Length: 124
Image 1 (cartoon, rainbow, N blue to C red):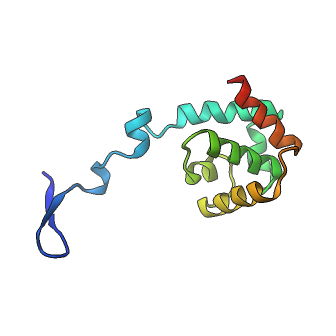
Image 2 (spheres, rainbow, N blue to C red):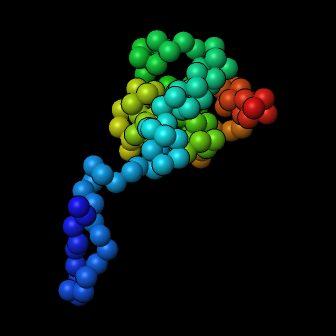
């Protein structure tokens, strides 16, 4: 049964649920953590770049193609940085965010890897 919590002023607040009972963003919208949908998007990106899933393990965390792929997924889906960090093997969510931001500010739209991924938007 939900517990009642009081606000700062001592007035009754909303019902509070334990954290494990609160549905997450992904559970509400995608019926789970979103992995099947995001996994397909990741596969499409890898195919367009001519990369294999095994290369996600072996390539450096900040490889240009990995950062471009993370940026593409971030801009075309609602994927959290933590998911990108885990599935692209790029370190922490904070480092993924920093690398994507840097990619936005420094890489031109003519960069070959980014150009390939942007073409994927037209195909969908």
